[in-house]
Amino acid sequence: MQVTANETGIPMASNIGIETEAPATTMMLDNPYMMVRHLASTNAVVLFSMSGCCMCTVAKRLLFGLGVGPTIIELDHHGAGPDIQAVLFQLVADGRQPIPAVFVGGKFLGGIETLMACHINGTLVPLLKEAGALWL
Image (tube, rainbow, N blue to C red; front, side, top):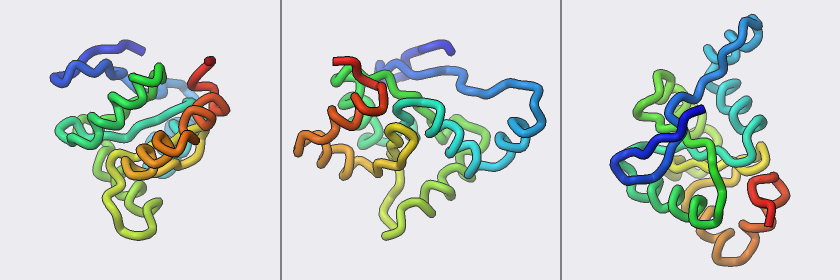
């Protein structure tokens, strides 16, 4: 995986993809729900983002500032972006904006409000440690 900087200067994974010859993996890539599930379960921290979203930039800066290297999926640059966004809308039951969407340790943490609340109340770092995203 290559890491590049976007126009905001935040490093991002530039080629996130799963390339195997297994038919199950191919089906997984065709199903946005399975794609989200697979990404969340195989990475300590996953951030679904939009490149022009200021709250997404806040989430990225917070995670990078804590020393976390999240897997970042820019939905506006991803072929299945609208389908993935529809899956994320289903995860947010109360109809709030699901972007940015943060998964920690394979579980849906929430959006920017939940991420900031966990940071402020001191529960974010223990969650990140438990997920293996921090070794401090």
